[in-house]
Image (cartoon, rainbow, N blue to C red; front, top):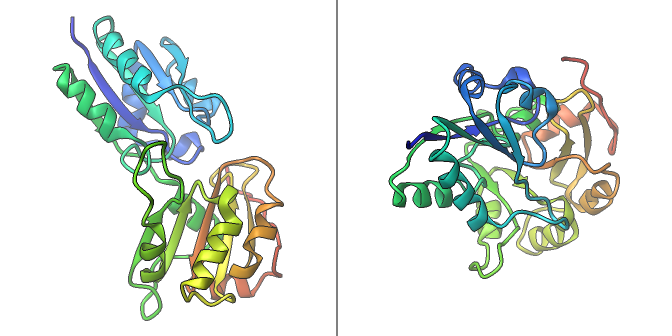
Length: 251
């Protein structure tokens, strides 16, 4: 028996932001390997499946990628439908290429089911467009995180060149990000926002200027955080006091 492995984007957290295809495949899954931040309400869409947590979180024990690859291949020998459930979109900072390459080398069918990435959910919650006519014509998705043994990140050059920047997994590096951007020429007054738990009921936005980013990051409460930077934020954030928080009312 050789089943199919589906790399599914679980989106930013809200179950009703999953695609119809994702819900259908989850309902057929025999086993689900899921990230640490996938909420219970999404896992509940696969009530018949065995659930295996393989999440990675900074500073905490995590499952080695090579072990995840092997588990996926082994599961495909036992189940018709194997799901690798990732937060956001699998193809954006999700290490999906490593899993696809390994599975294909084992002659196992693999399909990707895209999901809504965190940057889009964060922008929606903050009430800003990542692009705007005459203001922002380019967007960079970057992360300062570098895996062990990997080449240095080129995030700074991309961030300086883009009109709008979305930082993934960057809250813990807020002081270094701020220092590097200002040293590279980004004005210290550039508007920024940190959106915590985007799309969820406890979502909130911390807003201010680039120079205030380290202080804002200290106010986070342990949820998944996305940093947005750029002039597109100025009109929306001008109506709020710096460092203000806002709770989502939509469910």
